[in-house]
Every structure is written in structure tokens, then in C-alpha cells.
Length: 93
Length: 501
Image (cartoon, rainbow over all chains, first blue to last red; front, side, top):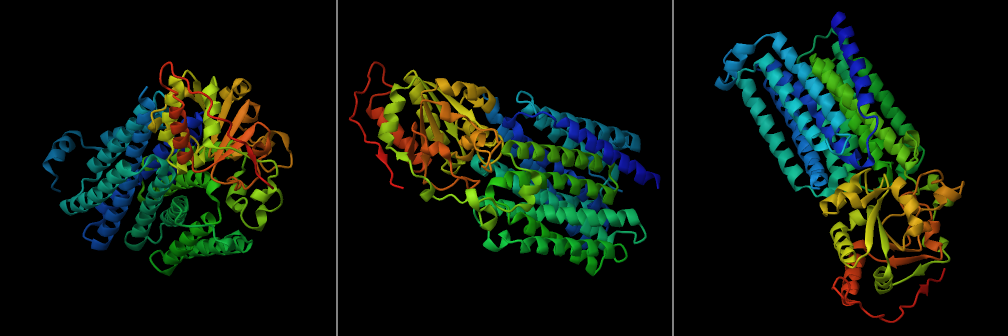
């Protein structure tokens, strides 16, 4: 299954990229970085949206999709805003 | 397929897989740049915005691709309104001191989202012969459930809603956790032939309990590491969800966050001189039998403690030329950062050189103390990292340790039998005079006695950090500190009272 091997390549390269991106971080930024990375992990919104679209007329699935969209967006919006709040404090001077 | 008007135009103009893929690629690039930029102080805030933009692009690209029907739009709107509003309110209202538990809460919700997607697909939308999809579902459910329950337990422990129950420190917990892990594995295997039945719920239940079982025995000191690790898991859960719904963008982003989270976890472990294995399986330090021996330190272990009043401390500050504050967890708990800033301002007006020594793990998470002090308007340049300030201590007149303990323990350098041995610490014992503001002589996070407290140049000021700082402020103001030309006279020697062992 070629789409599987393609997906596995994507997984591998994405992981390697992630390992490299965060090599050197000043301790000051660990908390905001954790919070920002956490917001990005809410990218599951994409899965939630896909699920809602796939649901068709299945009300139960629509409900599950909307629930998961709510949870994921809570993570995304809350995460980005709270990270911004933290970083805004460093920016003042 | 009807589209809302606003989207129908760009969709008509720009539809096609090529364009959607272009958006996806741009989003991945921006996400990577965002994570990278978050690691530099100057670019961090812009990078956070960039990552948010990338997320928005990714969502837009997907909506163009899937073109939801009106019913789907309705449910999308409901989910968006609920989650978005809740996120907005939480982010605005949460106090900076509660940041670790907030990240844990957000993280748990991310895990829950991946869990729900996988459960939804398993129940209603899976091809029972598609092995890859089924394995992805099992992984997504397993990791999502652990992320969710583990994060919620971490949050509850940080909030003080949950203690570390004594039974969780006994070796039985390893047996229970192994049993839960095996049950999860059995559930996953059975799920391959029966995706929507009992095995799914067995997996959900056992993985959820496993998240609780693994997180509950871990002490407050190690919680930041756990949150960081769970953050990495939520990336893995997202990548698994990407396999479930067939989204490459989701796989890349999840993998990046998962890998980056692992690195961050490792960095934190190094800073705390703890190995990941001992954090996860060692139980809470200083609690229960496992922390016995040198770790069991009560006040009876100290024999040469000197305590003094706020007045005496204020007098030492008044004549000092150079003062270093060492803020720690106790300062965060007492919410005393604003009082500290006020005291520092007063001393600066008096001509005293003031700086803050920041240990990499000061506060409740690495970097947390910087955020708290920044909130209290402390100039960024006054926050000095450990490597830079350690050579400065010998020429420092007064060090005031505020609710920090293990990070100033000189035994980490001198005593090879100490559990802290090898951990980089702030060498405050080099300063001429050290005041330790502390509520009691209780042991620190790690449950280890602190030799600093018994040094001749050290005096303890017992009390809540905020109360002591306010006391110092009023003493100094009474002495006339901060008023031009006025220098308060000596107020009579406050006797140093040696505390009986």
C-alpha cells in the first residue's frame, strides 16, 4: 500500500524535523514553548472537521465530531492566546 | 453541494487538489518556522502568531477541500463556538501562576479530541478489513486516552485537588499499571476483528485508567516533566488521528510536536538532574518508603539554625550595595511577585544594585519564574540566569532566597551521597549574607535537608513570602529608605535567636 508507506515517510521526516527544531532553547522560553507546542498539537481540529463532513446524516457521529472539534479548538485557541499572553510580558522592553 | 456564499467564490476560483496541497505545504512550513521561532526571545511572540496563522490556513485549506454541507456547517459552528469561547475565556482569565495546570488542561482536551475522532470512526465509519485504519484507531484511542486522563490528573494535583495517596507509592502500582497496559494491548488486538464492540470500550477504559495510574504516584516536583511528556503524547495522538482520517498535514504536525515535546522533556529532566525513567517509575521523592534515608528530612535534622526578624533583614538590606533575590516555588504559591518587585524598586531608589537569580527550573516549570516576574514588571535584564550569576555571588552583600530550596542546596556540589548531587545549583553560599524566607523548616520538593540553612552566614526569616516582603517594605520605609537624603538610624539590634534542635 503505497499511501501507507508515503504516510510513514511523512511521519518519519516530521519527527526528525521536530527533533531538530527545538535543539537550543533558553530556559526562559520553556514554558511558553511548551504552551505553544501544546496549542499546535490541537491540530486534531482537522480530524474533527473531516469526521463531521464524513458523518453525513449520522447524528451520533455528528455529535461526536462536534464534541471533538470543541475539545480540539479549546486546546488551539486557549493555547495560542495564553502563549501570547505570556510572551507579551517579555516583549515590553 | 451548496456552499455559504463567502466560501463559494474562492472555492470556485481555486478549487482542485493542487491548490489545497499548496495550502497544506505552506501551513507545514509556517508551523515549523513557528516552532523554531518560539525558541528565541526576540521572535517568540511573532512565531506564536505565525503558528496560529498556519493553523488557520490548514483549517481553511481543509474546508475548501471537503466542502461541508449545511448540516455539517451547523455542527462545525456549534463545536467552534463552544470550544473557541471556552478557550478564549480560559486564556484571558487564568492567572499566570496557574500556567502549568492550564497547559495540562489544554493538553488533556487535545488528547480527548483525538480519542473522540478515533472512537467515532471505529463506531461508524471504518472498513473492518482495513488493517492500517484499525491499528491507527487503536493507537489513537490508547494515546489519546492516556493523554487525557494523565493531563487531568496532573492538573488536579497541581491545583491541589488531588494528593499523592500513600498506596500509590507501594510497588503494587507497577503490577496494576502493567495489568492495565496488558488489558489495553488485548483490547487493541481484539479491536482488529471487532472495531465497534466491547474491545473498543475495554481499550478506552484501560488506557484511561493507565493514564491515572501512571500519573498519580508522581510528585509535584516532577509534574512539569510529566506535562511536557504528555504534551509530546498529544502530538503522537494527533499524528495517529492523521492516519485514521488520512491527513498528511495532521501526521506531519503531530510528529513535529511529538518529537519537539520529547526534546523539551529531556531538557527539563537534565535541568532537574532527574532521569525520565525515575520520574515515571520512581514515585514521589520524599514520600513513602522509597524516599527514605537521607531524603527523610524533618526540622529535627537541623541543629544550627539561626532565625531573624524582618526588621533585622531590612537593616542588612539598607546597608547593602548589591542584593540578589532568588525566587522559587514558594514565591509563586504566595503570589508575592508584585511585592518583590516593589521591594526591589525601593532598594534601587536607595542606590542598591538589584538582580534576580533564575535557576532553570525555578517556579513550577522551567521558565515559569521569568513569566511570573515579567508579569510583575521586573525588567528583563535584571533576570540573570544561573551560569551568569554564579560568579557574581562572592561580591554580593545580601542574598534573599524566597521560597526556593533544592536549587540553592550546596550539597549538590559537595556531597556525593546527596540525591541532588550533580544538579547545577545557585551558589548563594558564596555571598556575604543569606536570608532564607520560608514558611517552615519543612524539606524541599525533593525532601532533602538543606545544608545552606545551617551555614553561619545564613539566617532564616520564617513566614509566608508575601507577608515577609510586605514586612520588609514597611520596615525599610520606616527607616526612611527611598526618601532622598534621609537615612534611618539604627533601630537597635534585633537579637539573632538560635533555634534549639
